[in-house]
Image (cartoon, rainbow, N blue to C red; front, side, top):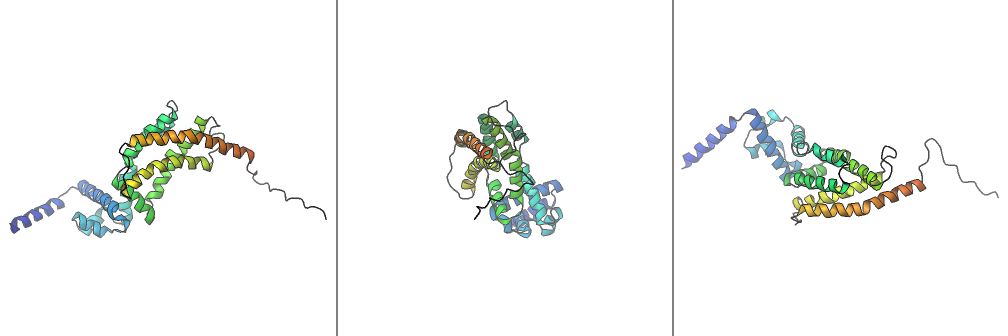
Length: 244
């Protein structure tokens, strides 16, 4: 029986050595995604190689540095799950903004509501490895700022071609995005119970957002009109002193 076990182990190692390069790379990437999601970025490549049952040299042949592997994980987990259709949907003014936001966030949550996606994102932010910052820049450019622009149009205020987005408008849009993302954090980081019907959660969040955000945007623009920014190159005149 012992010999049979040893033979099976040897056979397994032999099959492992015979993997095609593409299959081997896929094995390493999939293993790295699970590894970083579980232990974070303190885990080393030697630990990953041991978990995969391959030699350090074999792993380094595909990914000579930890940074190279992290970049590949970013492409796999974040860029690979990004859908260009989301950007098209958010910009389609033939569809009511409420419907666009519901469709987008229902699809978006399906893509990100995963153990590996959320935990790698949080671990990367804590360790400063770059994944979180890169992804948030992507989200701001392709989701948050477009959402703020569409809210401006839906509110009936001048388009951003006439009046640039205010920082506070971007923060409003981040508020909706962050509220829905935090569902995934509660589930996969804090192991808390979240509603099973995420579609209803999205619907309620969007309706609530659109019930209050337009008024907030109007208020922001009213304040901007009342207190215009000083013209560049001109200094405010000092207050005239009372003569003694």
